[in-house]
Length: 115
Image 1 (cartoon, helix red, strand yellow):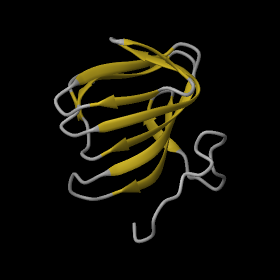
Image 2: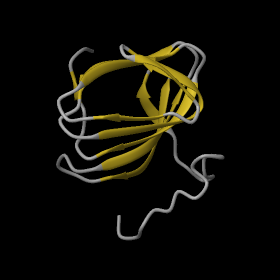
Image 3: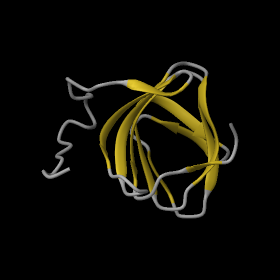
């Protein structure tokens, strides 16, 4: 990443021309940037209804901005417009019963605790 990323439309729509891949079954990912060797990363995640990400730990900060739908973890339900900041050392699993779209920013990659 050599240029600044500007998220002027982050609350209204996902930019076009993104390459989507599979993060987990039912969860698509479009990486905005991902530094090698455990560095920072940012991506859009799109959860299909009923999709989930199993228990994982955050060795660094994680910011989640829910753009559409809602997601939940062990601490609550987060509708569109919610910003969740998970501090280093926290862990959770994430589900979306209705499906959702979220923008995530990590300063270190997550550590999966369950498959």
